[in-house]
Length: 150
Image 1 (spheres, one colour):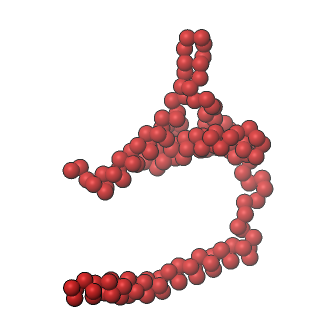
Image 2 (spheres, one colour):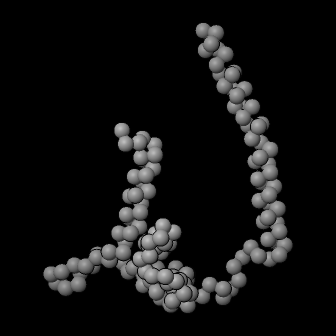
Image 3 (cartoon, one colour):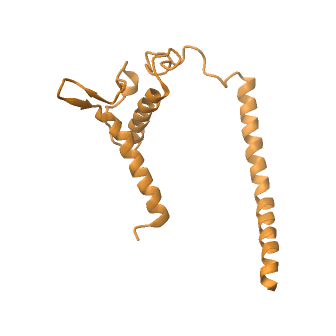
C-alpha cells in the first residue's frame, strides 16, 4: 500500500524534474526562433515578392486562385510532384534531370483519374500510383519500426 501511495508523487516529481531540466532548452529555442523571425521581418524578407514564382516556372501555382482547380486537383498534382522529388532524393529520376527548369515539364493530372476513352475502353492516369506507392511504403516502414517483423 505504501508503494502505491508514493508512486504518484514520485511520478510527479520525476515529471517536474524533467520539465525544469528541459525548460532552458525550450526557452532558448523559442528565443532563437523569435529573433530569427524578427530579423527577417525588419529586413522585409518574410514574404515572397510578386513575380518571383511565375507560371513559367510553376504552371500549377495559381490554378486555385483562378478557379481552374479544386483542392482535390491540387492535392493530387502536388502529391505527384512531391513524390517525384522524394524519389529524386533517393537517386531515382523518373522525369529526368533538371526538369524543374522546363516549362510544363510535368503535365497536370486531370480529373477524373479514370476516364472513358471510347464506348468500350477506359484509361487511368498511372502517375497517381507513385504517391500511393510511397504512402504504402511509408506506412509499412512505420508499422515495421513499431512492431518489427514478429
